[in-house]
Image (cartoon, rainbow, N blue to C red):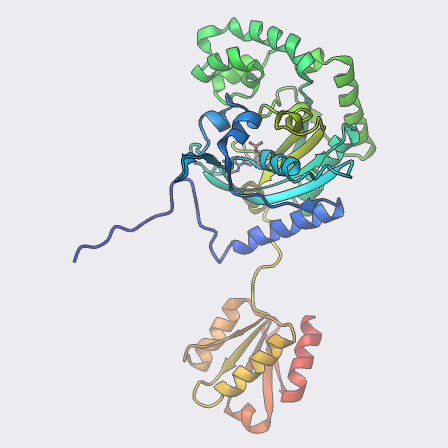
Length: 424
Ligand code: AMP
């Protein structure tokens, strides 16, 4: 018989396996806790949207839309895209569901899979998991600071310490007019030395040359004129205030005039948190202000600011720093029985312990006492409860503390109370 060819997960995707899924849960939990502390409410949007949404918001000439978007036609010929990012869908929904009505501001968060057809490598996947927040409806520079503070607090709640906050202002369309001209003149001098993409960017969006990852372009960008010198008075004042609030809150940062962010809709504040323990894919998260996006998608003119980050990069950073992920799904109690004579008593006790909220593993295989004991030790459980023929005959159970290797008999009626007291 022909052996069927094994089907594998698509390139650039991966499975979250049971031995590590708790890491994802932990980060989701910490993110949701931080969102609650800052009073952001969750929003869930579809995984696919009209492709136009991203073309009109992220920008038709950005890498994300031009090269990386999973775009397809459905059976009725509608042009759809798997979402490459979360802000445009949130804004689409905000406008469509009239969330503006009666509220001056909306504070929203999302968390889910995003899709980009990029060259897969460590820290860069075709399906990745991204969380983000959007603070919609205020132009106050404190909102920018608060989004940055949220980011900083999330990262430090995870225990990470080896990161750096980099901030910039990319101004508004008025500042960009003069700056783009100066930047084009600067880069035009290097003509053929620029990579193919940058030669195109020179015509369409010269700011994007500043964050090209090709080393020869990077070297040229080193001495490029800085946007900070071309900000108009209002943008400059806005940036000063963002910085002064960061100073007030004692958040460390450096100004990096090369941060431009890869999406068209940003203006004024742009920031990234950089993992300093790695050189590649080191942006833990990034964000910025987008005051024109909502109007450009058909809503009322509404200023907004937000941030987004990938869960994979947080996990990798936490692993690099040897940090603990809480919620590792170890059993607390492991019930050991003798299949021939004590299985029923063990099943009943297991049910009772679980009813009392304890995390209990019950050995279903017909393994010997010794083997069950070894599995209990390996499982990381704090206690083993042994129910053998002798225990059944005397109406007792043996409880063994697996950490200090001490054991004692307890009456059946006392066992649950004892374990609850020790574990809760
Ligand atoms: P962006 O939406 O490109 O500004 O990215 C924001 C954050 O999302 C980055 O700092 C990463 O943490 C994460 N991210 C973006 N693209 C990917 C990807 N292809 N794979 C994994 N994480 C990503």
